[in-house]
Every structure is written in C-alpha cells, then in structure tokens.
Image (cartoon, rainbow over all chains, first blue to last red):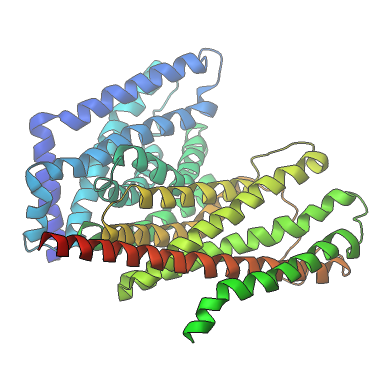
Length: 225
Length: 232
C-alpha cells in the first residue's frame, strides 16, 4: 500500500509539473494533429473507408505521440539531477516506475481522449454508442505501451542518442500490442461487439500483465548508479 | 582445464569443418529431391536449422541476462552479448535463405505471413539490443541495460509469436509438435544432422566470441589501472 501511495505522489508531482507548463501535452497534441493531417494526404479519406484504415492511422499517431511523452518523462529528471533526488528519497524504485508509468499513461490517454472525437469529426465517422468499448480498447492497449515504454524511456534517457534508440526499442518490442490495438479498434469501429475481439483483447491483456510486471521488477537495474 | 579451454577455439572449428562437409554432402546428394518443389527444397536444410539455432541463441541471451542480474558477474553479460550477436547472424541467414526459397515456391520473395513477420521482428529486437550496447559507455550500465533488454526480448518472443499467428498463417508447418510432421523419412536424418552442424557452428562461434569479450573486459580493466597509476 505504501508503495502505491508513494507512486501516487510521484504521479501527482509529474501531473502538477505538466499542468503548470503544459509543455508535453501541447506538443503531443499538435504533433498528433499534424500526423493526422499528413495521413489525410496519403490516404484520401473522402473515398477510402475510415473504418478500415482509421484504426491503423490512429495508432500510428498515438504511438508517435507516446514517444514524445516517454522520452520527456525521464529527460526532465536529468535536469538539476532530479533523478538522484528521487533515488535518494526513501522510495522503492518500483514506486518510481509505477508513478512514472501512470503519468505517461495519463498523458497518452489525455491525447487519445481529445484525438478520437476530433478524428471522428475530421474524417466523418460516427462514434456515438461506441464510446464505452473504444475507451476499453484504448485503455488496455495504451497501458501495455506505456508500461514497457516507461522502462525503455528510463533506459534510453541514460544512453547516447537516446532519442534514436527509444523508438527503435519500443516499436520492435511493442509489435504485439500494436497489432492487438489496431485489431480491437477495428472491431469496435466496424460496430461489432467487443466479444469479436476476444483473442486480441487477451493478447493485449497478456502483454500488459507480462511487461508491466517485468518492467516493475527490472526497473531498479536501470536507475541504480 | 585451462589448456583445454584455450584449445577449444581451435579444436571445435576442426570438428565443425568435418561436420559441414558431411552436412553439405547430405543436403545435396543423400537427401532425396522433393517431388513438387524440386532441388530448391534443399535450402530447407540450411534455413530451418538456422531458425532453430536463432531461437536457441536468443533464449541463451535471455537466461544469461537473468543470471547477470542475479549474480552480477560480467561473464554472464559477455555470454548474453555473444549469444545475441551469434543469434543475429543465424536470424539473418533465415531471413536471406527464406525469400530465396519462397520466390520459386510461393511466387513471391516476401509475404507478411506469421513466421516471416515474427523472424523479422525478432531480428529488429536484437539489432536494437546490440545497438543499445554500442550507445552506452559505462561498462556496468551497459551490462545492466542489456540484461534488462535481454529478458524483455525473450519474454516478447512468445507474445510476438502468438499475435502474428492470429494475425496471419501460410508458412509450411514442416515441424510439428507431434512427430516429424510432413518431413519425408529419408530427409529426416539429413535434417537432424544439419541441426547438429548448426549447433556446432553456434558452439564454435561462442567459443571464439566469449573469450574475445572477456579479453575486452580485461583490456579495459588494465587500461584503467594503468591510467590510475600514471596519475598517482
């Protein structure tokens, strides 16, 4: 319980920091909007069916935006040796991981919450009545992405050329969750019941469980001096 | 013991050479020609064993990574690194020989089928593993980071496998869990021998690569000691 309370404190600290500057979320939002605009030129959505290509387009956008949050999350701790401070505090590295993971998750979900309705308006597809299942699908997939991304973000923040390594590592390891995310989103967008995407849901849930716990356990080896 | 270990990088390649000659003879002359695909099927004796060895090598990386985090001995890290590099070579062999076979048989060099996709994804994961090592300067940090990646990569193998199989499926399932599957009884001994040739190749490369890794660590340690003495 203590572990979660401390993780909550770190989460709140990150959110407060973000709220005061809005550095990360504004960058992420406008970047994802731009990605959507560019996709609009590559596929002509006036003729193409958004229900078919849309899930892929949205997830490419979300993962690109997620990279921004994940790399930023540990780079800010480098300034003024804040990471040192966090590690010196009587906090388990696991708490730091959970706190950071939650803040990355919040940022990504925040962008998704704005972007999904916005894309529905821009590309003209109905999402009423699908909100609940969309939320479930987005939540499960984003958790896995943020879970392993937080570990890799911490790792690459301490290497040379971390900004190049993070996407490389993250996208190769996240292949299963990206496939699952696109497939589940596709089922929901086509208007099918969530049970049609049961297998993919299981893959996503398994990915979440395996990688959130593996990251939680190995995080200490990344941050220790 | 020490002389034995030192002579391993010389003895193993000799045995390997003999095995390769026998394996080549088996694959090109002893094994019967496949009825539908013809001679192009013979690439299977190079392709599938390389694939099996790539998996073995990445599994060794995973286990050695875990042992490193547990025991903190740099030897495990050297083994994990060596195995990842060798696995990457095998994985590259699979990715090159596969399309060579697929072009005449499937009529296309590449298709986004489950096992192909999975091999490519694995290859990418371990390329990034090797890259991360290159971009980290501190030796202990390098070992810890790559150990974490080695474990995460190994955990990912099964999930990637499951997800791409549900996504696609077209690869010939020659090797099934139960029995030899679709492999002709006359082909089986040659194929099994080829697996051992590749296993020997793996052992050889490891027997050469691990001492090099240890020597690199030793060299770095000596350089540091020398620099410290000069400063004093």
